[in-house]
Length: 83
Image 1 (spheres, helix red, strand yellow):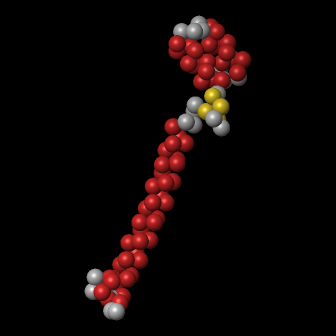
Image 2 (tube, one colour):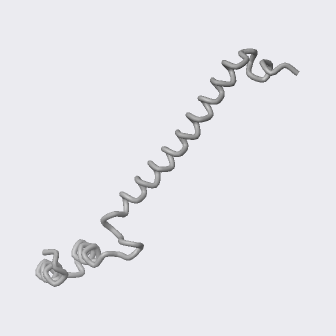
């Protein structure tokens, strides 16, 4: 069995090209996974902290829905130490 046959008749050059392409694909997949994880974590950074909804976000939602007045909202922010 000839070794060059498996690499398109290029011999050692074919093996090197195959190795380079394989390593590039693996590195590309790793960077893709890192990018996806960072993107998903950035989308939730202001909303939650360890899957717990932050009190300021609850106050913002309640004010936006009209459940509380502006004065109540400002008092909540002051009580929470953010306003």
